[in-house]
Length: 148
Image 1 (tube, rainbow, N blue to C red):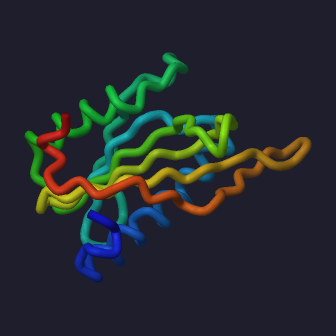
Image 2: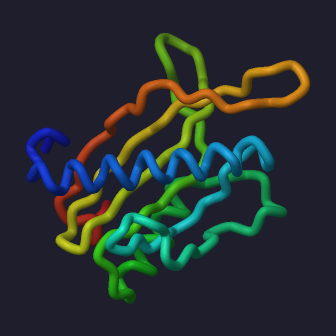
C-alpha cells in the first residue's frame, strides 16, 4: 500500500506528527549527535504525551529493528490512539554511499503504521547544525502487530 492510498485525514495527521518530531529531534541530534530509540505516545494535539526510551544512552550501538520489536511489544499491551517510534540509523544512498538518517515509524490504533527515513547531516565548522534531506517514504504496514 502506498502512502497516498491512506485516508487524507490520516495522511495529514501522520505528516504533522513527523514534522513535529523532526523539529524536536533536530535539537537532540545537535546536542547528542545521535537519536537513541524512543517510543512516544501522541495525544490529540500531536504532542508527545509519554516518551519511553528503548535503549540506554551508554550503549552507542543502535539496533533499530530490535528496538522497533520492543516498541511493538509495548504497544500491544498499551492503549494509544497514535504512537511514534524513532531512532538514528544508516541507510544506503545511491550505489555505495552510507548516510545517517532518522527512522520514524508512526502507528495508528487501527493497526496501520507508516515508516519514513529522513537523511540528515551536520553542517558548520564549530557549531554543528543539522540539515535534513527530503523524507523517504518506506512503506505502510496494515497490521504492525503481525510484523515478521
